Length: 274
Image (tube, rainbow, N blue to C red; front, side, top):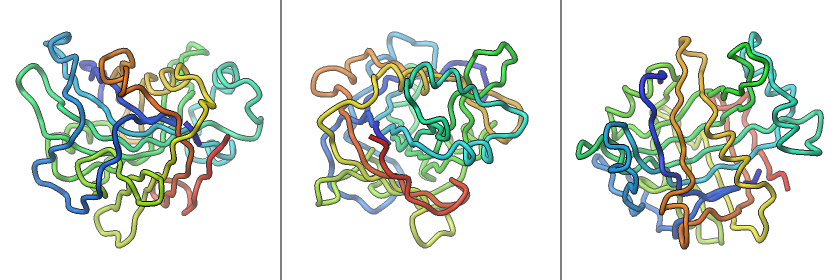
């Protein structure tokens, strides 16, 4: 590991660990705020796209090398996996493995013009390079259950259209990640009704970039769909704004992702693929 309908585009300025995330680690806040206020940078593109919903993403994307058979068991059987699409981007990728990816994110300063909603957190495993359109080459992302913080009812209701959304609390609250005191950053999500974490990403800044940024641009901008209904979501993630430059540039990370059902087939820790 390194690293919802087509009605209007949700344009996002992306600020990430690439493994990806770039913001200083914050101290742990274990409470879920009713009105979430983070230390993320302001939305730099809301005036550039005044009639569209825009916001920023701060967090971590990380490629997970999982067994191809596991991906095939998760992705709906009627949808083929476009092996040639990811093999062309990832030369030498093992034939029996598949590049899923983890996301642990904070959506910040989201809205249209002056109309804003509160920040919210989300975490999920995504399955890119899925055949859906029927043209033989356009890649889609299949999204399993998504954990989303319960402090933002607007986000919960909106995201539930065409997505399998599960409410959960995050540690730290209202931030993309926090320092665990051992040189790592982490984001941990616990679903409603669970007594232990269901999803946790733990990462350490690396010294090299195992994958080009273009691979993450490709995967995160594929239209997404889920097992709920027949709708697709095509929000656009931008990587060329002020929150992806200078001190906010993406940094490489390596680490692991802990997941358990319903977010993956079984309880497991998905180790880094270097």
